[in-house]
Image (cartoon, rainbow, N blue to C red; front, side):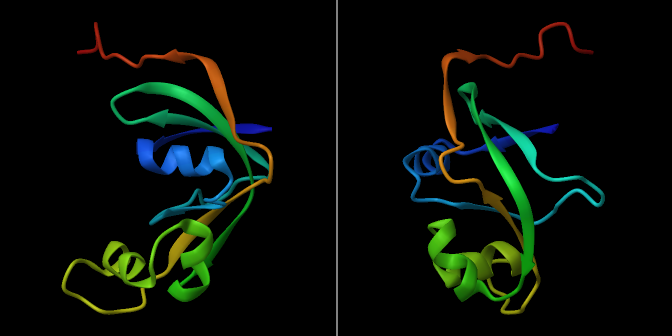
Length: 117
């Protein structure tokens, strides 16, 4: 199984762990990848906290369809996809999270850039 590192805000990570958020919304997706993939989650400002398995990625501009499972409103999805004042129908990618796969690691692994030039 391939592994991907994904940065996620703390709020969304908690909802993923709770099982309420079953789709992670992104503007991009890998062009060629075999599923399932393991997603290692870097929580912004915290470190690498856990993982989940993504079974597939759905591509859609039907924001009402993506809203409930992503814990976002159709309006929030529209702003994310099209910009603050624009209304459009740009497609978003929904990374579908396998049920019961999110795992919180026992230890948080900090990510530093010490020594990187």
